[in-house]
Amino acid sequence: SIRGQIVDCGSPNGIEDRGSGYNPAHGPVSARHPCVEHPARPEREPAFGSLQSEICNPKSAIQEFLMETVGFIGLGVMGRPMAKHILAKGYQVIVFNRSRPAVDELVGAGALAGTSPADVAARATVVITMVPDTPDVEAVVSGPAGILESLTPGSVVIDMSSISPVATKALAASVAAKGSTMLDAPVSGGEIGAINGTLSIMIGGAPDAVARVRPILECMGNPERIVHVGAEPGSGQI
Image 1 (cartoon, one colour):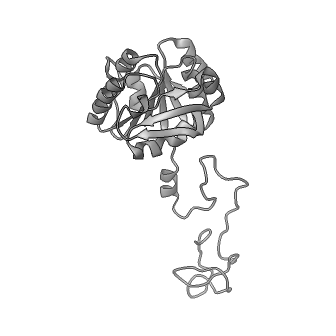
Image 2 (tube, one colour):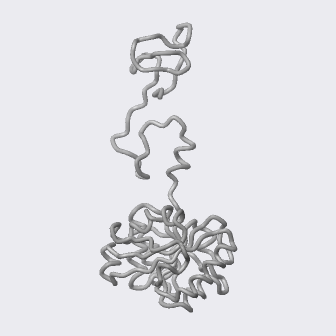
Image 3 (tube, helix red, strand yellow):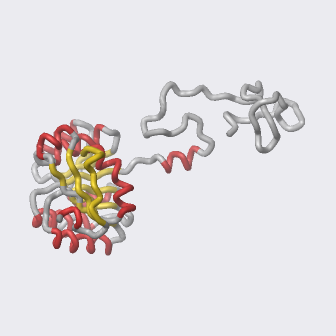
């Protein structure tokens, strides 16, 4: 690729042959030709990952490396440290909890506050729920001001609670009807695993959605213990 911008310095083709490098439009060019502007290399790679320091098409590169916006609902003894790990990895995180102190703690760490599960779903591309039991998940997903009220098509909902696989299948069907995907991803490892980011995570749901959110799951769990159990909704709960 051509580094920098080619400018006309009076030669017939706007550049002259100095014997190294190659310009597809004009032929070989010097890697340090005086008519080529050579931007300085950054001292380290950008924070969003292995983005090359010299970009030929900035727009497509930004789109490719754009991070998900993560919604996190349920900031109890497990959810609070899990959400903090995602935040620490540079993701924008929008949080909601029934009691306000946990929300304030996360906002103090850099998160944004959501006013309801519906508000979180409207602003996030990936929505995680971590609540105590089946009725709680059902209320958060399909109840009043729930996730389904404003879920954007193409989003992924990840329920990391331990609930009924039958209820999981029904909720996954409702999410699918909104043009999105639901994964069930219950965890083991307890509060210590949540604090240390070493949880084991068992996942049920579509493989492409699993691949999409795996970097987020790896913020919270041991990568070697993040297991895709099966493609059927509820597989992770069995």
